[in-house]
Amino acid sequence: MATGKMKTIEDEAPPKRGRATDPLLVMSVEKAFRVLSVFDQHSTSLSLSQIAAATEMDVSAAQRFTHTLTKLGYLRKDPETKRFELTAKTLQLGYYYLRSNRLVERAMPYLLHLSKETEETVNMTVLDDTEIIFISRFMSRHMLNTNVIIGSRMPAYCTAPGIAILSQLPEDEAVAILERSDRKPITPSTTWQIDDLVKKLRVSREQGYATAFDEFYRGDASIAAAVVAANNRPEGAINIAVPLSRFSPEAVVERFAMHIIAGAHSISNT
Image (cartoon, rainbow, N blue to C red; front, side, top):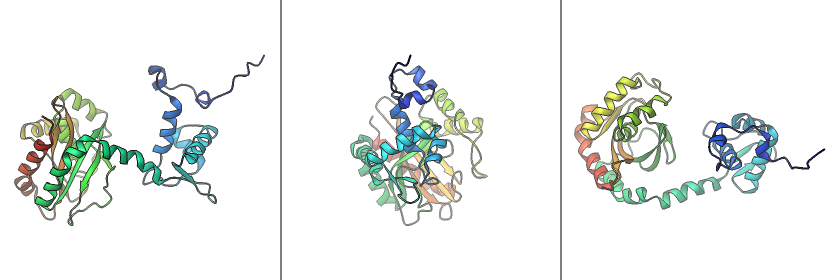
């Protein structure tokens, strides 16, 4: 005999490991964010079937989530192509984060000072698992990569800010992050083998700054220092980025190391 129980979106797929180990996790919220996260610079406009495939949902569930997110104003559906894209409303969360983040607020005057004093590109980043995220950026007229904006992500293992942050973590914790990173030689100069990265972490910890030359972007040089909280845990990192066409690696260290160390120390909540 039928029970009359209404089938919900969460019933449409078997529970995943995250739900089984976390009874407080609301799967419908997780799925909504999963839909939003499939849109990126390579997938700016997606069909319903593409969203379903990318989120590992069936088409019926994907249709309900895209419809809801469209009604809420976070997605737009083209009436002719029936494809979905993000709306400007999705920027709200990032805006609220930047306006309420104490690290950004504390760092802003020092980043501005570094930018004016060096006339080079100055960034602040934070660690998110195996990646760094840009949360503040002052660009110079010499910048190489105009596609790097606030919110951009890069692997931690091959960037100066990433190594600077990891170097201030307990080594076993930093190594665990490196081991689950998608490590590969992005350029011929990329440091990506675990043993070499551990050596780089130790050197960076000892000297108080990290460097990356031609490791993620060709022709790019970066020097970074970690911003440390009162509990001696890294909160993020600041870095100065310059083109190798203008500075040799030795010149980058000689000219900017003291600037970046002093700036990070001033921002650190110690």
